[in-house]
Length: 360
Image (tube, rainbow, N blue to C red):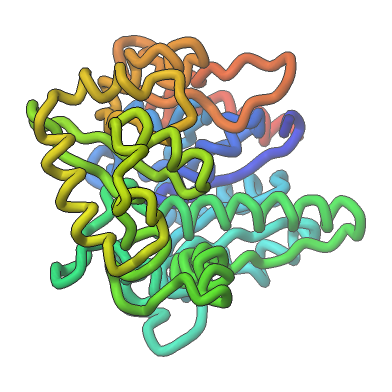
């Protein structure tokens, strides 16, 4: 889909490389400027985050290598950098310098706090950003500290994916107008924006600022339960027709309390009853019981387990090229295979890219 689009990525951590990988998955020519030597290495050589990319090794403190970086950026549709505000300017690679040479460039800046604000130049990580944005608030049971979402809700959800949307929007605009832009992709912005659906629920009165009392984190029908073997089952049968199937499968269709799906006063008691029910059998029992139904119940799988699940196998969601487990590119497009590209090695394409620059 992105054939013909060139993206230059300055080596960084987390959301920047992920965004560049996603663009490479979609067919963009992504050239990563890796740091020379292993001393500056911030990801494993040949990391899955570098799949489908090309790599050139440069020292951005060397004037000749800076000149090479400028040439690369001048040839690109977009740039991705993830330094603190001011670092790229001090390298002579800030937006003003880059736009002078390439007015249509979409200059993507990936940070946690953003380019402005009191915390813009301070350090932070995923947990800090989503804590500040409000996105962490509901990530726990009542009375317990919020847990760290290992799926990187901030770095990936609020950061990388918003950066990609910004870059593609900027490229479309640049192709129409000839004018590039600067994308300020801040994790605090994106993760707060992800809360919009919950805020819409709040307008209906079904979202409380108190954990454990809202539509999605309070009911007995919207949580995970431990099973006899230590596995877990997820339950989220929100709509009445799905909830009816859920309690029918459990033999509870005639239970007067379970019939009161939205009686919040009963939620703690019914949660405790379901905890006892699910604890009586192993996960496989419950997975078989609900398999193929519209009860909105599914086992909680690890990535390795997910790679063997029939639905995931049929779609090829998890793949293991060269024995390295990784998810396939997403989303999918008709007529195009969802196959991960080969990860590049640090500096692997240096000679090739320099020859392309010399050829003009």
